[in-house]
Image (cartoon, rainbow, N blue to C red; front, side):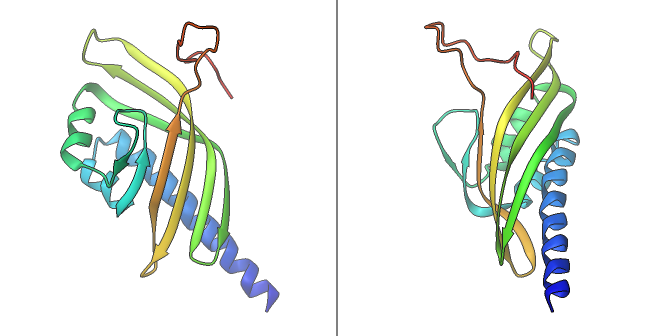
Length: 150
């Protein structure tokens, strides 16, 4: 019995990591609908863009953001630690974004912190809470610390 329970945890863990991998793929493909499908309809999203929080994923807003980049938007997950308990999961780690801005045709590359909460409903894992952040220098300059690496 313990072995079957451990196999379920391993499968659940792999399924949650697959959702995180899909985040990377939908960013790369600039697929706003696919990106939104990974989230619960009423997910709380504390992303880098104002305002302080978003409720749900606005597909048009996400697509407009994707359209501001020339070529793919690479978002690589690294060092994600995932904990699964029943139908809920929690993960945290780092995301590396690498893309070329259409404004000024410049490469943008930086690391950010990411925390995700997921819930399984009807057999599907969906993100119910997402929080990304970039540290800033506390020297009075308020400069984002885009030069940090894990």
